[in-house]
Image 1 (spheres, rainbow, N blue to C red):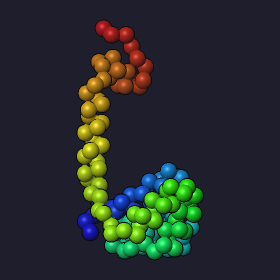
Image 2: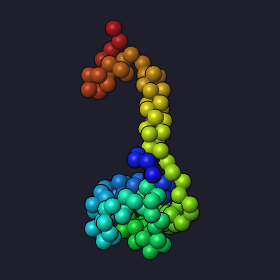
Image 3: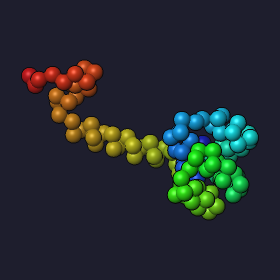
Image 4: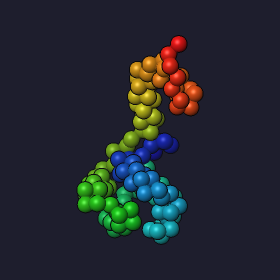
Amino acid sequence: MMEGTLTEFGQTCRKLRAAKGFTMADQSLALECDPSTISSIEAGNRQPTIDYISRFASWVKADIFEHQTLIKKGSSSPKIIDLNDVRKKAQKRFYRKLNKLTPSQIRALRDGGREKPDD
């Protein structure tokens, strides 16, 4: 698998982990598995077991919907997500929003949020 890619399962795990303020190192300690194993599962090089999915869901205190999503994405054939594509799409959204800013909004951003009257 290419570097910079995640499966949908891996991306979901990463989002849930980050939303709780946890790191992969925290996950490794809590689930008692090597960080390289976690990375390999998230990248799609290893298939997660139902036990792994359940332990992860319990650790992040996933709600029933999140737990079902993890099971669905973890037990199906991994769909690979290219993170470079995700970044490119985010950049495009950012630039579209940036282009809609008024000159006074741009000055306010530049000046640290203090909006000044138009010249």
